[in-house]
Amino acid sequence: MNTDTISQEKRAALELSGKNRGKWDWFKFLLPAFILVLLFFFLPIIITFFISCTNMSTATGFQNWKWIGFGNYKRIITHPDTLSHLMLTLSYVAVTLVFFNVGMSLVIALLTTHIPRQVGFFFRALWLLPRITPVVVYVMMWRFIAADAPYGILNQILIIPLGLETVNWLPAAPFLFIVLVNGFIGASFGMILFTSAIESIPKDLMMSSLVDGSSMWQRIRFVIIPHLRWPLLFVTTFQTLSLMTSFEQILILTDGAYKTEVWSLWAYHKALSSYSGNLQWGFGTALAAILVTIGIVMAFGYMRFFKFDELVQEPKIETL
Image (cartoon, rainbow, N blue to C red; front, top):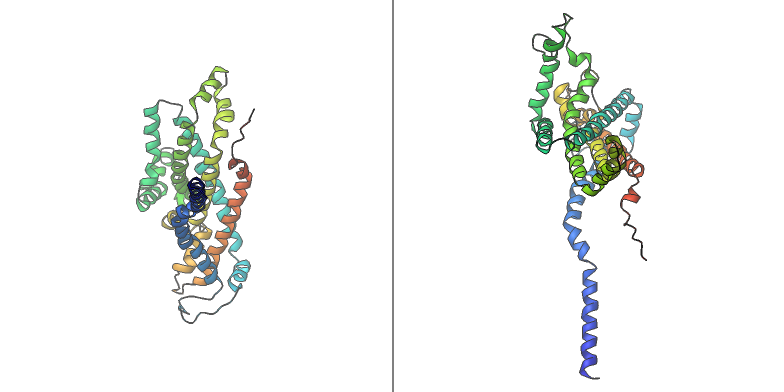
């Protein structure tokens, strides 16, 4: 066997080994993220479902708890407040999501990208204030807006000048205020993503639509909206899960009073903040587990609605 044949065989062996090593590069690249997701996402979910099948509480401690299977879930089904908490949560999420977290954020993004750039930037910066303001300060501002006279800003501006009887607006319209408090925060998040997506649309498409004589509404419907399917899917999914699981604004605003105890706040009260002092960790985590399940189901529903399979397809290139 000559030296040329040997060198070719070595070269082929090196190329084959290089290809084999390259097959696992993706795994090495994703391994740190996979470990983080496993530790801080999947493992807490497993622990949550495990505790939800026990009677663990401050009365039993961490030593004397018992395995009760689906006892907590049966208790939730038969609980007299379950339906009211569920309907309140679904209504709160739907209204806040449609009118603020997606609707208003999209409108703001469209408006601020069709006005002078500096003016649009200033207007978007104003909408970021509710998000960057500390939660306690932000919610207390809303409490002063809704308070009865002589402190309530709403009464001072609208009711007293008209000669009408002043109202404490928070107990009078509690659902409206929990939507407003969370809606103005959520609108800023979608506004940032939608604005970035709109500004990344190729200028040639926008100019072509202008040359073709399209109206503003036609450009939004046929040019801009089709390019926002990915941001719409992400914002809708993320904000739905955020609204379902977050409760700190409602906790500070009403603490569940005036029939504003959404599902996540109910779980918090049962597991971590009880007036009786008996924290029902098993029952509270069962409530959280149901919330996680609902969130997963809704996420898959959004993916189907926005045709996720089409979004991740490779572009079709015609070959001559």
